[in-house]
Image (cartoon, rainbow, N blue to C red; front, side, top):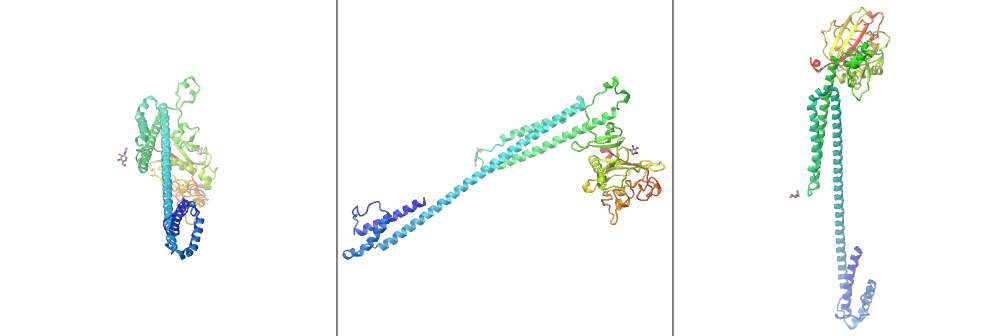
Length: 481
Ligand SMILES: *[C@@H]1O[C@H](CO)[C@@H](O)[C@H](O)[C@H]1NC(C)=O
Ligand SMILES: *[C@@H]1O[C@H](CO)[C@@H](O)[C@H](O)[C@H]1NC(C)=O
């Protein structure tokens, strides 16, 4: 394009030159003979002719004086060609700019289309996942309904009707969500910005719907869970276990087959235990473990001999040790899991070497996580009405972190309480009791602070014969008392 334009400009220049030559040679406007100026002259020809004319001019000047000035004309022509070239350059530049702008426009349009497409895809995905969640919730509800039908029987199911109406509401929600896309379909002449806004609004609305649906599903689940628990409690009260002599007899078949109960979460379900040992599973996801039950109490510590050494490191206290049928400590991990799954009360039973038994009870009890160093994070009111009372020698330890011989968290600047007391515990610059101390078969009355002592029962120097520490979940009313 540039070449053509330049050639054109040159051709114009040449035409001008030729015109000038014609005027000068003929001394008039009469055209020269065709042989002298063929119409298809090349620029080289023109240049050579111009040169000959210049040389010839002084010769002809002798006869006729020159009627035009070649030099002036040439300058003029040169200027014009220059202007034309500049103009051409200008046009070219403008065309380039326009070209560039067009490119940019195409690019930005493509990008916008891309982003719109991406948004639509994203929206579609969210819609899909929402519908997936809906399906899940619906199947969960169906499952729950089946479970409750089985557990509660037709009469109780009627009471659940109201809960299940939530399900109908959810269906309504899902229907309105599914119809949403048409309702919000972008108008044909709306700009990209408007589409953006309406998409965002729709996504926000969907997010809100999702949250509220999840919440209502959770509520229904909780209600059903509570009802199931209540039913289980009632059943426990109304049905005694089958007497051994009835098993295998014809009458035994008359006992109704109960639906499978959910795994035990505490010794409150001791009727499921075997010789005092019960398998607990606190949540469907958590690992199950065995505990020793004393009635509906879960035993967390049992000491009655020197068979098991309690002067141990952090890992042993974390996981627990000993024999569940004899002396043992349950382990801080399980203790934390148990006491963080439900509010528990604590009871400790002591016995000295003369057979005197005494009790210490606390209305609430919980310990923190390993990250917090298993602190005695909750220790409620001391139950002074238990009789005979061993007195309160634990409140001093409330809030203290757990210490072992290899992990010193005891607030004592220049000592290790666990090493001094030859055991472990929630020491607070040591303390008023040492239930995890050394077992003393002899000289128990003068064992000193390393023995199993409870200051308010027989004093700091007396090492006790038996200690049993137990916890039990309490109801909400009991917790409020
Ligand atoms: C399209 O947009 C114009 C203004 O931009 C508005 O007046 C017109 O009603 C719109 N058309 C439709 C179908 O919404
Ligand atoms: C505690 O240990 C004693 C002695 O070994 C045993 O008889 C008793 O059953 C144990 N108690 C519990 C609740 O495990």
